[in-house]
Length: 408
Ligand code: GCO
Ligand code: MG
Image: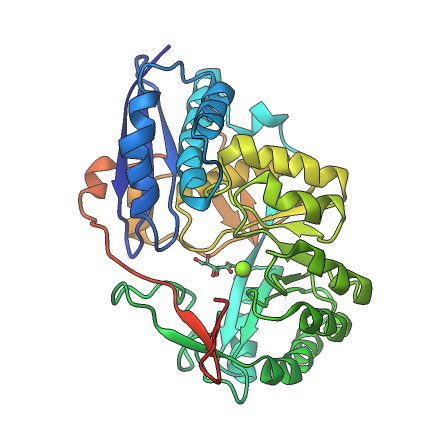
């Protein structure tokens, strides 16, 4: 069996999905997602100019060797651009393999450990009142776990995860008005004075059962993050995400020695080497990598297995930049993984998105059920894809009140 051709498409409804389609000489094709939010053309170029010419002619069943060929063969290893490109190839090869076996992908991992995998959605408000309404709306839709982000008094309204104005805008991350970023302001003092009590009010309003998550988005210094993690303990969070940047991983020891709040980190990681210390020292409870920019199924499965040895559960990234292809790959891992924790999920299902990526995966009462079709169980309509073009966009940048540049 041989790979005969591969093509990359960039675009989608309100998104720049990077979709890879690998064709074989047996008529079976595989699909992969290389969407690196706001840098989409880079993995697309890496695929087209460097990887696809080396892919054609290879036996698609040797997905491990192909992964090693690109990773070890590149000499300059890792990085989100390369790992997103390898990830898309890897997803597509697993798709082909499962189609050849005539099985849904999860069967190749070892079958199902559960039927429905728990999802969390997002709630956000410019103030506590709007946040409460937004949480209520998510619960009404059946979600048992909700990530909550709230505007902070004293800080300009637009900060991470919080809509401008009072609306419920959960697609805030990318600004498509151009390549120049918008500005957000961060003030740790205002945040730390307000947020622990706000989370406690949410807990009191919605009761003990609701699983509450909160994302600090890398904004606190290590000492602040330790204090904050201790302060939020009474709210009994399901997780506290990215309390401090994980570049200096030793810094997490300080937080760990002051708080038992469950910690989730890893959405910006792209290799097992980024995860290793946090997992082995048991400095986190959930690993947040995504199949999209952590090297696909082959590499993420290795991370999941390492995590399992250290009581770390999965909580894969699922921001709206992931296409239904990588979300499907994660859904298959989620029903299999013995150490599954939760999956981030933001409804992608517009009619345009469903037309571009037809699938029978379904969400019911906050749980995701994978379809039993062979492969990833998602298709890609190339004719629909012709409707879309790449649209430049950017993440905001963050400054402190005095103008100092800070972590987005
Ligand atoms: C999350 C993430 C995202 C990121 C986004 C960047 O927890 O979902 O923090 O919101 O900001 O993926 O592109
Ligand atoms: Mg996050």
